[in-house]
Every structure is written in structure tokens, then in C-alpha cells.
Length: 189
Ligand SMILES: C[S@@+](CC[C@H](N)C(=O)[O-])C[C@H]1O[C@@H](n2cnc3c(N)ncnc32)[C@H](O)[C@@H]1O
Image 1 (cartoon, rainbow, N blue to C red):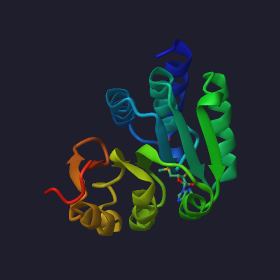
Image 2 (cartoon, rainbow, N blue to C red):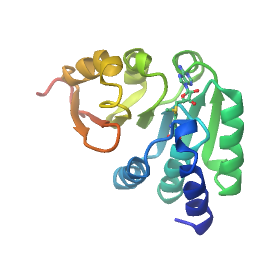
Image 3 (cartoon, rainbow, N blue to C red):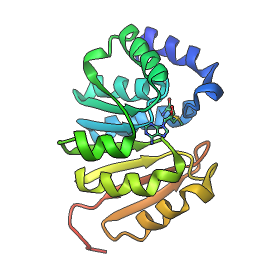
Image 4 (cartoon, rainbow, N blue to C red):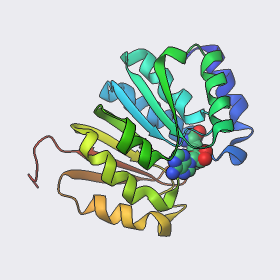
């Protein structure tokens, strides 16, 4: 990781409560997993000020991939754009403004191999319903706040855990991170 990116991540960690950012450990794990998977097309729901997006973009620099990230709070997205610019990541990302569910349904025409869900916890199930059709077999879904907001995300956790197309594990990272793998062959147990 470039010194500039590490410095900005460290700076943003001082205001992480205000911007509801993922933990450093979660960011580091997402960054590693994107590189391990060699992910090419990543979708993020919930940009905030770009903290997790910077971890994602740093990994995509190595894989040669691209990030599409969605946020409905314009002021936050402006901050994210600034930090991406400072890190030299502008060309690695497409910023979409609006309700994540509507943006995915109405504007997204491509498929993804890696999706990170970190927007409104009550909408996780409806997010999953629009993400599944655009996630390639072999793709990965990560979702944050699985233990910190367990009641709100339960409908999503139940749905994806009982879906035979997915292999699921909840990781004991701060706030709980659900990791799901979309199987290559449908319903093969
Ligand atoms: C937990 S924060 C995201 C933190 C970010 N992933 C990070 O770690 O740096 C959630 C963000 O999603 C936005 N958000 C919540 N519900 C949304 C929705 N339905 N569509 C778009 N953005 C949403 C909020 O404004 C907030 O900035």
C-alpha cells in the first residue's frame, strides 16, 4: 500500500464513529480477499466518506479491477471523491448517488464478482434480491454489521444461509462480517 493511502486511512480512523466506517481489521480483510479472489468488478452499497472504498480500491489497483460504489448522502460522497483523488484512485471507481436498491435495479447493467453490503441494515434482504441476479457464479458477497445489528439483518442472514446457491460463513471480525460464496453449479448441495 502506498504511504499516502495508509496515511489517509489512518486519518479517517479518527472519525470512524461519525462516518460509520468498517473497522481497520474488516477493511484489511476485504482488501486481502479481493486480491486472493483477483476480483475484477466490485460493487459497494454504502460509500460514506470512502474509508472502506479506499481499502477496496487499493486492492483493485493490484487486480486491475474497478469499483462501483453507491451512496444517497451527497455530502459524504463528495468527501469520498476527494479522498479517492488524493490517493490517485479516481479512475478506479464509479460513484453513484441514490437509493442503493433503485440504483442497482434501474442503472446497473453489468455483472459483478464481488459485492460489499454496508448500507441501511433493514434493507439487506431487498439488497440481496437485486444483487443475486447480477452476481456471477463464483462471486462473493460480504455484509457488515451482522452481529452488531443482528435483529435488523436477520431476514437477510436467514435467506442467504438457506439459499442452496450460496455457501455462507459469519466471521468474528468487529461488528460481524458475513461472507458468502455463490456456487458455480446451481443446487449442488
Ligand atoms: C455504515 S455506512 C458505510 C460505511 C462505509 N462502507 C465505510 O466503511 O467507510 C452506511 C452508509 O450508507 C448510506 N446509506 C444507507 N442506506 C442507504 C441506501 N438505501 N442507499 C444508499 N446509501 C445508503 C448512509 O448514508 C451511510 O453513509
